[in-house]
Length: 427
Image (cartoon, rainbow, N blue to C red; front, side, top):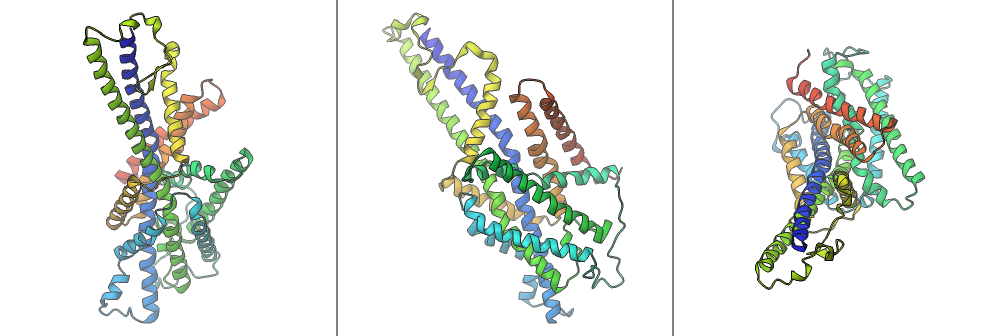
C-alpha cells in the first residue's frame, strides 16, 4: 500500500507540474508577444522619423539638391541605418532589472510626448500650415464620421493594442513604496486616464488634420519643416527611451517559463530516481517496506522524495487548484527582482536581435500594430482576463456574466480582425 501510494504521488506530481507549466505558457506567451510586437514597432517608427528628419536637415542645408549623394548622406537617409542605431541606443538601458531604475528616462520620454502632442494640436488649429511643401499635391483627405465594417475590424486591434499595458502592472505595484489599495488604484486610474486623454488628442486632431489620407505612422504626413523635424527627433528619442519598458515584462515572461521548465524537469528527474528505487526495493525479498504493508500506517503528509503527498479528499478541485497554482506562479515571478544570470543575458540579447531583424525587413508600422493588436493584445485584454475570472470566480453573478461577455468578445474579435487584416478585403 505504501509503495502504491508513493507511485501514485509521483505520477500525480508529474501531471500537476506539467499542467502548471502549460497554464503558465498560455498566460505568459501573449504578454511576451505583445511586448515584442510593440518594441519592434518602436524601431520601425524610429527609422521612419529619423530618415525624414535628416532629409529635411539636408534640404535646408542645400546638400540635397538632386545631385548624387555622398556616402554619409546615403547613410543618414537609410532607414536601416537608423534602426541599427536605435538598437545600439537602447542597449545600455536594456539590462536594468527593475522598472524603478528607468524612472528618469521615462520622465524624459514624457516630456517628448507632451511636445509632440502640442505640435499635433498646433497643426490642427492652423497655427502652422499642414500642407507646406506639398505643392499641388492633395494632402488632406475626406473626413468621414463612420467607416465600413471591414475598415473598422482592421483598425479595432490598434485601439485594443493602445490600452494593453497590463504586463507592467505587477512589477509597478511591487516597486511602489506605499502599496495600499488606494495608492494602487490611484496609480492605475491615473495611468489609464492619462493615456486616454493623450490618445484622444492625437487621434482626433491628427485625423482632423489629414482625414482619410492619414498614414499608419502619423508623423509621415507632416511636411519636412524645422518644427516637424524637431517633433520627429523627439518621437524617436521617446521611443528609444520607452523600448526597455516593453522589453522588461517580455523578459520576465520568458524567465518565468524557463524557471517553470527547470522546476518541472527537476521534479521529473527526482520522481524517476525514486520510482527506480521503489522498484528495486520492492523486488527484494527483504523489503524494508514490509512493515508498511498496512495502508493505515502511511502518513499522507509525509514528504516522499521531496514531494508532499496530496489531499485526495477534494479531488473535484484539482483543476481549480491547478489554475490557481499557475496564476500564483505567474504573479510571483512577475513581481520578483530579476537576477543577472545567463538566461537573463541570453533572453535580452535574443529579444534585441529578433526585434532588430524584423524591423529591418518590415517597414509598415500599421500592419505590425494591427497584427499585434489582433493577437497578443486581444488575448491580454479580453480573452485571458475573462477566462481567468470565469475559472476562479465560482458564483454566477453579474461580474461573472460580464467576464463571459468579455471572453466571447475576445474570441470573436481576434479571428475576425485577423481575417480582414490578412485578406485586405473591403467587403
